[in-house]
Image (cartoon, rainbow, N blue to C red; front, side, top):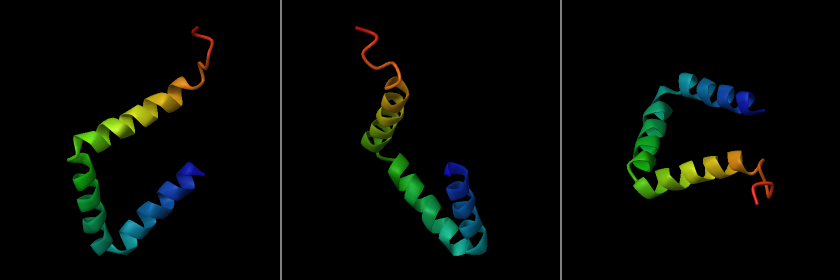
Length: 57
């Protein structure tokens, strides 16, 4: 499912080049905020660590 969504987004970006500039500007604006980047990394790390659960106690 994840690959279908990625393929659809890439197809739209190829069909409408003006959207590519908008998407890149949005990504650059999000990455320029350290809080957003730290929050995203924390979510990614938390999702990977959930598999351990309470076994570590």
